[in-house]
Length: 437
Image (cartoon, rainbow, N blue to C red; front, side, top):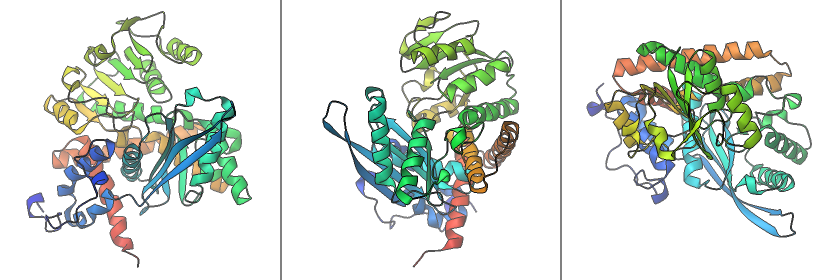
């Protein structure tokens, strides 16, 4: 059925969305809605249900008051959004960042729905966050804000309802506090309420490296399809934490040259290739790539024009925009971050024959191993790291192969192809379940 003849496509009679849900409003949620609109013509009869994807199932905004070390009481705003639960419980990270907004968390939850469906793990999409700069908090304040936030959202999370995980500025310690708080409130230890936990509290081997390993795995697969040789390839990475740092390390081990890295502290460059292990150690010691002695500093905007073959944005959303997309020289962009490319930039890159491997497949390694962790917690039987990595690589390769085939069959971008697969799986589940009551 051609898109033009689809009788289930939304019409002018579709109920108007409230202003904060409209695509023409600024913010990440608007970008997500544009992506859904682009895929709607390819959904066939399931387009009848497409409005499901444009309305989060549940959005919770909470006040998070804590005692500060100086004796004052500070209030922070927290969020937990459950976008869709047609295929299973909500799943998605929690970020602590001073720029967190409801629009951002809604979009991230929507992308999690697509991502989980694209790799076919039995989850819906969710996301959470607190608007706070955690670098300004003491360890005690960080623990108190984590525990209070967990108590506030505890009414909607749980091992079979919604399972948080680490994200920007959160880690296994944060997850341990969240798990403990939830467990104390229900009167029993519930290791499966979060993933990304410490190993000795029910965490999974390979979880910390999983997102970066997934970026590397699909990157190698994509490069193979376009005839790009990894050995000797020049790579630029934005963000050098658990995602960008691990991906950069794996690409370097495969013979690629990581020539440029940018993070919140600065931008560095070395034509012959950076010593990635040494750079990772420098970042661990100083908190940033800035000042790395074996590289030269670049201006912030110069990063996008670095001559290279592969670009990996692994920081925050909306980094590749209409303003800088035309400067990119890479043959391939692998999105380690969520939502790093705006729709306008997507179009520019497509027209310039730059292959974009989208976030909803490229960085799905983290949630895939989170699924493994969740399964292991339920069974109290844990796998070896080799087993974890082998299962991850198999799932990522199969998922990317399916996305590539859909892209070829429909002559669309990999992002649209991933959305076709993800949306169809979500909406088919919605159709089969029906509406209650």
